[in-house]
Length: 393
Image 1 (cartoon, rainbow, N blue to C red):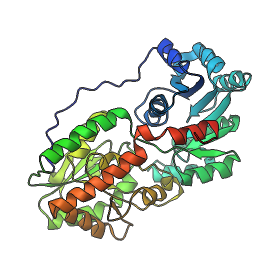
Image 2 (image 1 turned 45 degrees about the vertical axis):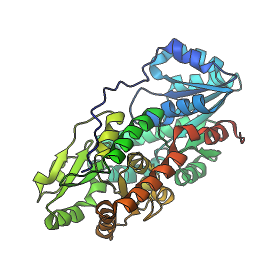
Image 3 (image 1 turned 180 degrees about the vertical axis):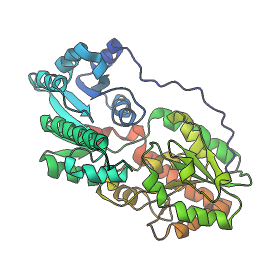
Image 4 (image 1 turned 30 degrees about the horizontal axis):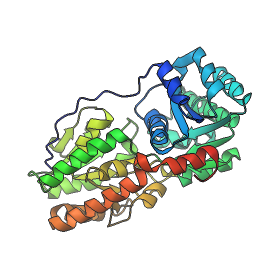
């Protein structure tokens, strides 16, 4: 693996902020945007609320933004009375949501729905459940997913328009809802970029020094990726059969007993960590694996596994879904592998890692610069403004 002298970082999530402070932030400028999500978490909330507020605050001179939650309860009336635009991020319908929307509408506020997955149309529930390796044989999962998707669709129906993460998902969302849909991709926040700069510089200073292992990493993010990883299982097993130096790093929730049954000693299970220290783990991994099944649900997935890895100088090999095809320039910023040529693409990436240091640096810098340009928080305001206010800045 790469040896980067960046010690563990003591990190505390920045978003548990008192309501009064968040309300003050909302009203700091002339135009006011309120993001609403069910509760704090490190996934949808971070990407679709916290990062958005950060990008607006950085990029706009006349628009302020803040985020709010179900736990704010009766105080949400103040938000409805003050915001010009309200963005409901993956919010499930209930009467409190409808009252919140109605109150905002009485002031002619615009209400938008923000969605980062194909979870708004219950006809896709069986496909989603299969893709996420959910049980199809008993009542519980069926009840959960049909209720969840139905309530998402009901909230969408309350809104004036929608915002989503990529063009593929936008097309399905528009066809289903009949509403205008704008695209604002997932992107990197300031904290990720700052720690990634440290990791990148440490690797450059060491001239990308390596130890005796070749580390391939799979950063699953949720417990539902067993079918995705299964795409790689025979290829990784074969690689381990032929190369004694390969190790596979697993971070997230994937069951290690499922992987590399012939080589259990080659698996390093990384502890669950925050999104800042995750960048350290990715940065110390030479090859990032991003397999996905090829179906309508997975084609709507974000490209975040690519841009988070490229930012710390780690090469990605990914399935050629719609978003990865858009994000990755094969052979120049990463590699795309269909189910039949994973071995070939992994070997091409390994050749870069183990090849000429000058060519490796050019490859890594090209990918990193592309990611900063397209996915840095400081460059997102134009797309966000078009999505929120339907005009060019």
